Image (cartoon, rainbow, N blue to C red; front, side, top):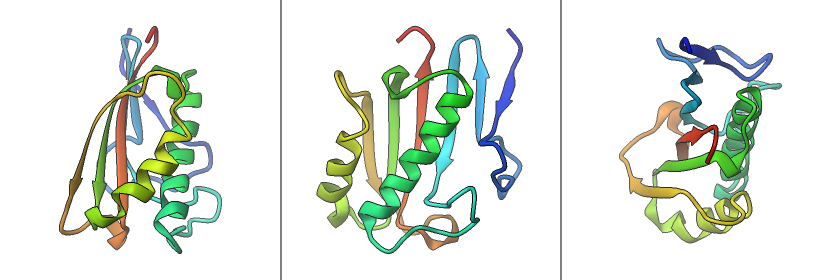
Length: 128
């Protein structure tokens, strides 16, 4: 199977030389998503919970474009501006992953694109 770029329909283009996601050999590699609403182009950052929901909704749309769901996700990476938000992020995150949750790491970083508070990337496998 050849490499295929996946993008949320009508979303703004990535802010750098990368694809929103790549599908290859039954695996989907989702680039780090920030809380940017693809329809409005606006950040949804009033609270960490709102930001986390927006990021996961963006990931959900990319997975759907690759004909996958959160059930296919085997690995996530979460980048937080403030690790004190860990519990709030976990609460929202858990609502998207039913059954066996994927492997994951969460790290605090000095800065994220557009100065957002959260970014999440993941890997999904077709037959997971």
